[in-house]
Picture 1 (spheres, rainbow, N blue to C red):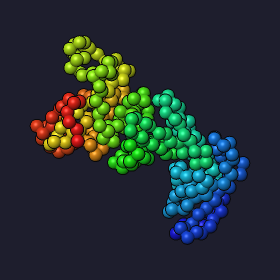
Picture 2 (cartoon, rainbow, N blue to C red):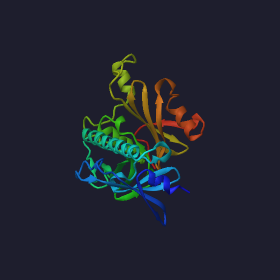
Picture 3 (cartoon, helix red, strand yellow):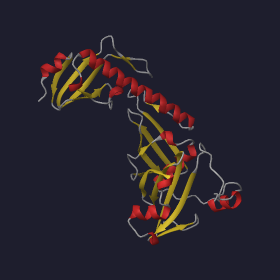
Picture 4 (spheres, rainbow, N blue to C red):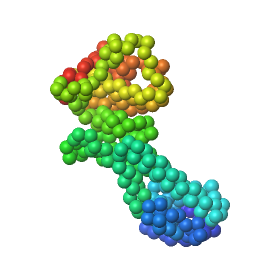
Length: 288
């Protein structure tokens, strides 16, 4: 059990609750400032779990990195560490808010909890993304035509990998198994471009500039089921890939172009089937 005398030596007020030991730190002159409301945060409460202090109040500090008691020797060190951790959170909050705005997405910050969220809408699909204190976005909720989807709950989204909104919405659509929209033939200029057409027109020696974005989508059938493999260039020869079926994500990760075995081989390995069972099909193939 934690030595309460050690906690008091660090300037903490100790109280025993039904859930365990809780402590409160009076920040005195080193108050935190809520960047939205401009209110001062003069007290922070923690739950004691072993050697860790878990921030539990107020709402603006919940979810911040726990403080290790073994890493501090004085109350001043604890206050300085808390200030640094809170400053990091505010930095991530501002950075991610700017990235959302560049993508044309709303940056919704709760003024009390300082939780950053955004809502991405694409046709019948509505996805809510929520960032943690380190600025990592996760899928918090997804709905299609008002019905909740649970297949991608908790999936991490690295926002900086998406240079434009369309890339993010396309990724989320593939992640959640959104059917590929078939573009009417009467809509000129909106038809997809096949790579075979690019090669025919520009030749196999044409280059993609180092900083240009590049996205590819391949539709496949494996043992009667439809899958999509989407890839987007992050930088240089590094790509972000996603394999999704009608039930949502199967795999997501990064890969280097030089080590990529090809769509058919990679999908076969991921689904643990023979390459002969994987068939590349066009966008007009029937979907489940």
